[in-house]
Image (cartoon, rainbow, N blue to C red):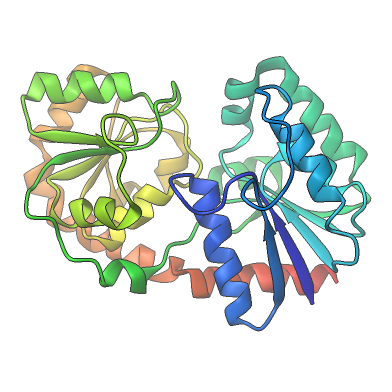
Length: 298
Protein backbone atom coordinates (compact mmCIF):
# COMPACT_ATOMS: atom_id res chain seq x y z
CA UNK A 1 0.00 0.00 0.00
CA UNK A 2 1.21 3.51 -0.86
CA UNK A 3 0.00 6.26 1.51
CA UNK A 4 0.52 10.02 1.34
CA UNK A 5 0.17 11.99 4.58
CA UNK A 6 -0.62 15.68 4.04
CA UNK A 7 -0.26 18.29 6.77
CA UNK A 8 1.10 21.82 6.79
CA UNK A 9 3.42 21.01 9.72
CA UNK A 10 5.57 17.97 10.46
CA UNK A 11 6.98 17.38 13.93
CA UNK A 12 8.04 20.41 15.92
CA UNK A 13 5.72 22.15 18.39
CA UNK A 14 2.54 21.55 16.41
CA UNK A 15 0.24 18.86 17.82
CA UNK A 16 -0.95 17.75 14.40
CA UNK A 17 2.63 17.94 13.10
CA UNK A 18 3.82 15.67 15.88
CA UNK A 19 0.92 13.28 15.19
CA UNK A 20 1.77 13.07 11.49
CA UNK A 21 5.47 12.56 12.21
CA UNK A 22 4.71 9.63 14.52
CA UNK A 23 2.18 8.12 12.10
CA UNK A 24 4.75 8.38 9.31
CA UNK A 25 7.31 6.66 11.53
CA UNK A 26 4.82 3.95 12.48
CA UNK A 27 3.75 3.25 8.89
CA UNK A 28 7.34 2.86 7.74
CA UNK A 29 7.92 0.51 10.68
CA UNK A 30 5.03 -1.59 9.29
CA UNK A 31 6.72 -1.62 5.84
CA UNK A 32 4.10 0.67 4.32
CA UNK A 33 5.35 2.92 1.53
CA UNK A 34 4.45 6.28 3.07
CA UNK A 35 5.49 9.84 2.32
CA UNK A 36 4.70 12.97 4.31
CA UNK A 37 3.99 16.17 2.39
CA UNK A 38 4.44 19.29 4.51
CA UNK A 39 5.59 22.90 4.26
CA UNK A 40 9.22 21.80 4.51
CA UNK A 41 9.13 19.82 1.27
CA UNK A 42 6.32 21.36 -0.76
CA UNK A 43 5.36 24.57 -2.52
CA UNK A 44 3.26 27.44 -1.17
CA UNK A 45 2.75 31.18 -1.45
CA UNK A 46 3.80 32.63 1.90
CA UNK A 47 0.86 35.00 2.19
CA UNK A 48 -1.34 34.76 5.34
CA UNK A 49 -4.61 34.03 3.54
CA UNK A 50 -3.15 31.87 0.79
CA UNK A 51 -0.61 29.62 2.54
CA UNK A 52 -2.92 26.67 3.22
CA UNK A 53 -4.73 26.91 -0.11
CA UNK A 54 -1.58 27.08 -2.23
CA UNK A 55 0.12 24.38 -0.13
CA UNK A 56 -2.92 22.14 -0.73
CA UNK A 57 -2.83 22.75 -4.47
CA UNK A 58 0.87 21.90 -4.53
CA UNK A 59 0.26 18.75 -2.49
CA UNK A 60 -2.57 17.64 -4.83
CA UNK A 61 -0.08 17.47 -7.71
CA UNK A 62 2.12 15.03 -5.77
CA UNK A 63 -0.45 12.49 -4.58
CA UNK A 64 -1.46 10.90 -7.88
CA UNK A 65 -0.80 7.19 -7.92
CA UNK A 66 -1.10 6.72 -4.16
CA UNK A 67 -3.60 4.17 -2.88
CA UNK A 68 -4.75 6.55 -0.17
CA UNK A 69 -4.22 10.21 0.75
CA UNK A 70 -4.63 11.13 4.40
CA UNK A 71 -5.06 14.87 5.06
CA UNK A 72 -4.90 16.20 8.61
CA UNK A 73 -7.12 19.26 8.44
CA UNK A 74 -10.30 20.26 6.57
CA UNK A 75 -8.24 23.23 5.35
CA UNK A 76 -6.28 20.84 3.18
CA UNK A 77 -9.23 19.35 1.27
CA UNK A 78 -7.94 20.63 -2.13
CA UNK A 79 -5.16 18.04 -1.71
CA UNK A 80 -7.78 15.35 -2.41
CA UNK A 81 -9.02 16.71 -5.75
CA UNK A 82 -6.79 14.32 -7.78
CA UNK A 83 -6.79 11.46 -5.25
CA UNK A 84 -8.76 8.25 -5.72
CA UNK A 85 -9.41 7.67 -2.01
CA UNK A 86 -8.87 9.86 1.02
CA UNK A 87 -9.11 10.08 4.79
CA UNK A 88 -9.60 13.38 6.62
CA UNK A 89 -8.56 13.81 10.26
CA UNK A 90 -10.04 16.69 12.26
CA UNK A 91 -7.62 17.17 15.14
CA UNK A 92 -9.28 19.84 17.25
CA UNK A 93 -12.95 19.27 16.56
CA UNK A 94 -15.53 21.31 14.67
CA UNK A 95 -16.04 23.91 17.41
CA UNK A 96 -12.35 24.82 17.63
CA UNK A 97 -12.16 24.97 13.84
CA UNK A 98 -15.12 27.34 13.78
CA UNK A 99 -13.63 29.46 16.58
CA UNK A 100 -10.40 29.87 14.65
CA UNK A 101 -11.81 30.47 11.16
CA UNK A 102 -15.27 31.90 11.78
CA UNK A 103 -17.79 31.89 8.93
CA UNK A 104 -15.20 30.69 6.41
CA UNK A 105 -15.19 27.33 8.23
CA UNK A 106 -18.59 26.62 6.63
CA UNK A 107 -16.84 26.42 3.26
CA UNK A 108 -14.61 23.62 4.55
CA UNK A 109 -17.57 21.55 5.79
CA UNK A 110 -19.30 22.09 2.44
CA UNK A 111 -16.10 20.89 0.80
CA UNK A 112 -16.23 17.72 2.87
CA UNK A 113 -19.70 17.01 1.53
CA UNK A 114 -18.68 17.84 -2.04
CA UNK A 115 -15.77 15.40 -1.87
CA UNK A 116 -17.65 12.65 -0.07
CA UNK A 117 -17.13 10.33 -3.04
CA UNK A 118 -13.38 10.53 -2.48
CA UNK A 119 -13.39 10.64 1.35
CA UNK A 120 -13.62 7.11 2.69
CA UNK A 121 -13.58 8.15 6.35
CA UNK A 122 -13.42 11.16 8.63
CA UNK A 123 -11.46 10.55 11.82
CA UNK A 124 -10.86 12.61 14.93
CA UNK A 125 -8.57 12.24 17.93
CA UNK A 126 -11.38 13.57 20.13
CA UNK A 127 -13.67 10.85 21.49
CA UNK A 128 -16.51 13.29 22.29
CA UNK A 129 -16.47 14.67 18.74
CA UNK A 130 -16.48 11.20 17.17
CA UNK A 131 -19.59 10.25 19.14
CA UNK A 132 -21.31 13.56 18.40
CA UNK A 133 -20.59 13.60 14.66
CA UNK A 134 -20.55 9.90 13.85
CA UNK A 135 -16.89 10.04 12.81
CA UNK A 136 -14.24 7.39 13.46
CA UNK A 137 -12.32 7.83 16.70
CA UNK A 138 -8.60 7.10 16.53
CA UNK A 139 -6.77 8.64 19.49
CA UNK A 140 -3.70 10.80 19.48
CA UNK A 141 -0.36 9.08 20.02
CA UNK A 142 3.05 9.54 21.58
CA UNK A 143 6.45 7.86 21.56
CA UNK A 144 6.88 6.16 24.93
CA UNK A 145 10.37 4.87 24.17
CA UNK A 146 11.67 8.32 23.18
CA UNK A 147 10.17 9.88 26.32
CA UNK A 148 11.67 7.15 28.51
CA UNK A 149 15.15 8.06 27.27
CA UNK A 150 14.94 11.71 28.41
CA UNK A 151 16.51 12.62 31.76
CA UNK A 152 14.53 14.87 34.18
CA UNK A 153 15.47 18.53 34.48
CA UNK A 154 17.15 19.75 37.65
CA UNK A 155 14.39 22.16 38.64
CA UNK A 156 10.69 21.71 39.36
CA UNK A 157 8.32 24.28 37.86
CA UNK A 158 4.66 24.76 36.97
CA UNK A 159 4.44 24.36 33.19
CA UNK A 160 2.44 25.70 30.26
CA UNK A 161 3.17 24.16 26.85
CA UNK A 162 1.52 25.68 23.78
CA UNK A 163 1.40 28.53 21.33
CA UNK A 164 0.21 32.04 22.19
CA UNK A 165 -3.28 31.51 20.78
CA UNK A 166 -6.58 32.64 22.37
CA UNK A 167 -7.75 29.00 22.40
CA UNK A 168 -4.74 27.99 24.54
CA UNK A 169 -5.55 30.78 27.02
CA UNK A 170 -2.02 31.69 28.11
CA UNK A 171 -3.53 34.78 29.73
CA UNK A 172 -5.38 32.58 32.25
CA UNK A 173 -2.19 30.62 32.98
CA UNK A 174 -0.32 33.85 33.66
CA UNK A 175 -3.06 35.03 36.01
CA UNK A 176 -3.06 31.72 37.90
CA UNK A 177 0.70 31.50 38.47
CA UNK A 178 0.80 35.17 39.47
CA UNK A 179 -1.92 34.56 42.05
CA UNK A 180 -0.16 31.45 43.35
CA UNK A 181 3.29 33.07 43.26
CA UNK A 182 4.91 29.86 41.98
CA UNK A 183 7.96 29.36 39.79
CA UNK A 184 6.87 28.59 36.27
CA UNK A 185 7.74 28.55 32.59
CA UNK A 186 5.51 28.82 29.51
CA UNK A 187 7.10 26.84 26.69
CA UNK A 188 6.03 28.17 23.32
CA UNK A 189 5.27 31.65 24.66
CA UNK A 190 7.90 32.80 27.15
CA UNK A 191 10.51 30.30 26.03
CA UNK A 192 11.08 28.25 22.90
CA UNK A 193 12.86 24.95 23.53
CA UNK A 194 13.50 21.63 21.77
CA UNK A 195 11.05 18.79 22.39
CA UNK A 196 13.51 16.85 24.59
CA UNK A 197 14.01 19.84 26.87
CA UNK A 198 10.25 20.25 27.31
CA UNK A 199 9.95 16.55 28.20
CA UNK A 200 12.81 16.85 30.70
CA UNK A 201 10.92 19.65 32.48
CA UNK A 202 7.71 17.59 32.44
CA UNK A 203 9.57 14.80 34.23
CA UNK A 204 10.51 17.11 37.09
CA UNK A 205 7.49 19.45 37.05
CA UNK A 206 5.14 20.40 39.85
CA UNK A 207 2.39 20.04 37.25
CA UNK A 208 1.35 20.88 33.71
CA UNK A 209 -1.51 23.38 33.38
CA UNK A 210 -3.69 23.08 30.26
CA UNK A 211 -5.76 26.27 30.33
CA UNK A 212 -7.23 25.81 26.83
CA UNK A 213 -10.84 26.72 26.18
CA UNK A 214 -11.03 23.93 23.58
CA UNK A 215 -8.88 20.90 22.76
CA UNK A 216 -9.06 17.69 20.80
CA UNK A 217 -6.64 15.28 22.48
CA UNK A 218 -3.49 17.33 22.98
CA UNK A 219 -0.06 15.76 22.57
CA UNK A 220 1.19 17.58 25.67
CA UNK A 221 -1.35 15.71 27.81
CA UNK A 222 -0.07 12.35 26.56
CA UNK A 223 3.53 13.44 27.02
CA UNK A 224 2.77 14.56 30.57
CA UNK A 225 1.14 11.20 31.35
CA UNK A 226 4.17 9.37 29.95
CA UNK A 227 6.47 11.65 31.98
CA UNK A 228 4.45 11.03 35.18
CA UNK A 229 3.66 14.74 35.42
CA UNK A 230 0.28 15.59 37.00
CA UNK A 231 -2.06 17.63 34.79
CA UNK A 232 -4.57 20.31 35.80
CA UNK A 233 -6.97 21.23 33.00
CA UNK A 234 -10.19 23.05 32.25
CA UNK A 235 -13.38 21.01 32.46
CA UNK A 236 -14.11 20.86 28.72
CA UNK A 237 -15.67 18.04 26.62
CA UNK A 238 -12.35 16.65 25.34
CA UNK A 239 -11.12 15.92 28.85
CA UNK A 240 -14.25 14.35 30.35
CA UNK A 241 -13.38 10.77 29.25
CA UNK A 242 -10.08 11.11 31.15
CA UNK A 243 -11.36 12.77 34.31
CA UNK A 244 -9.71 10.12 36.51
CA UNK A 245 -6.29 10.95 35.02
CA UNK A 246 -6.60 14.74 35.32
CA UNK A 247 -7.43 17.33 37.94
CA UNK A 248 -10.27 19.21 36.23
CA UNK A 249 -11.45 22.70 37.16
CA UNK A 250 -13.77 25.49 36.07
CA UNK A 251 -12.15 28.05 33.80
CA UNK A 252 -11.88 30.78 36.43
CA UNK A 253 -8.97 32.15 38.42
CA UNK A 254 -10.64 31.04 41.66
CA UNK A 255 -11.27 27.55 40.26
CA UNK A 256 -7.67 27.14 39.21
CA UNK A 257 -6.23 28.35 42.51
CA UNK A 258 -8.54 25.97 44.38
CA UNK A 259 -7.59 23.06 42.08
CA UNK A 260 -3.90 23.68 42.65
CA UNK A 261 -4.49 23.52 46.41
CA UNK A 262 -5.86 19.97 45.94
CA UNK A 263 -2.97 18.77 43.79
CA UNK A 264 -1.01 17.00 46.51
CA UNK A 265 -3.94 14.85 47.63
CA UNK A 266 -4.77 13.58 44.13
CA UNK A 267 -1.32 13.66 42.49
CA UNK A 268 -0.42 9.99 42.92
CA UNK A 269 -3.81 8.83 41.64
CA UNK A 270 -3.85 10.95 38.48
CA UNK A 271 -0.23 10.11 37.68
CA UNK A 272 -0.90 6.39 38.01
CA UNK A 273 -4.07 6.51 35.90
CA UNK A 274 -2.46 8.70 33.24
CA UNK A 275 0.37 6.23 32.90
CA UNK A 276 -2.10 3.36 32.50
CA UNK A 277 -3.99 5.18 29.72
CA UNK A 278 -0.93 6.27 27.77
CA UNK A 279 0.40 2.70 27.54
CA UNK A 280 -2.29 2.12 24.88
CA UNK A 281 -1.42 5.35 23.04
CA UNK A 282 2.09 4.53 21.91
CA UNK A 283 2.51 5.31 18.21
CA UNK A 284 3.12 1.64 17.34
CA UNK A 285 -0.35 0.67 18.62
CA UNK A 286 -2.22 3.68 17.23
CA UNK A 287 -0.60 3.29 13.80
CA UNK A 288 -2.13 -0.20 13.57
CA UNK A 289 -5.58 1.32 14.10
CA UNK A 290 -5.00 3.61 11.14
CA UNK A 291 -3.71 0.69 9.07
CA UNK A 292 -6.86 -1.32 9.80
CA UNK A 293 -8.88 1.65 8.53
CA UNK A 294 -6.72 2.08 5.42
CA UNK A 295 -7.03 -1.57 4.44
CA UNK A 296 -10.79 -1.51 5.04
CA UNK A 297 -11.03 1.35 2.53
CA UNK A 298 -8.69 -0.18 -0.04
